[in-house]
Image (cartoon, rainbow, N blue to C red; front, side, top):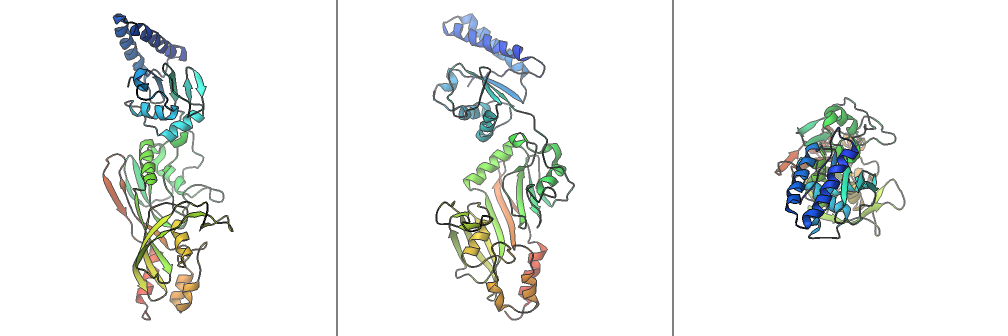
Length: 384
């Protein structure tokens, strides 16, 4: 693939335009067999590349680009072209689609806004990546439990009560605020906004491991792994009651609850596939069970919804919980369990392919103190 990359920090647009037009004209003469112009075209292409920067890219569509497919969509073609451009930031097709829709791509000096338009021979495309905008959230010096960090990603052990993203009612004190303070300008500029590359979430009161991207390339790679369901995520949960089987799979679609729009539910129509594998790790009489859960999908509130649907809600769950299993337990332990202030759910481990090294990495974290206190109390109970 032959690319013409012509942009500089100081040269004006008129200066940038000239080598491209001249090169295109020389190409026409070259096609008629003028050998001198073949050498001249190569020289102009070399000169054009001197002003290359990481924020702007110009590409000429020639016969080599379209030899195999002359009806290529713009976003797909740009993705392939950028991927084959050394030293230029790698951009996902989704990112390029957003750039097109946000008037950051031009064709023959005219802005284009349709990612699906067909690329044609002889067109000259220019991509301009906008400078990252200031993040709306403010950096806040909040202590983070960092399990691992390098130039590409950071793995956090999230505490209970921490919201991932700012939202109405939670404008500060979030994981994003903390990451802005900790990482500063090293955070990925995904979507043109300098903010952490959040690739998955945990509920406010769910504890445990999260991976965050620190570059566009890492973000793209991790998003693809989540979409392909190759990232292994395991959770530990305390539930009411005893399951009939020591291990099993809950395969039920999840969608918005038809009766309560603040909740998710197992639905018959309009839901998305959701699969949760579980295994009983420990039972405490007929009252409580400790489960290991592994997700094959990542729907909102998935484990909480699935377990509640089969009649074994998480201890402390304020949205999907019930107290049916608590009647058999008396005394101080019942009070400890009933007063548990959140859903007893912990993201125990993460396994994924590192975006840079391409090695399989594994991270794990211990149960938080509040869940361990309940387990210790249940183990010490002589009535079991």
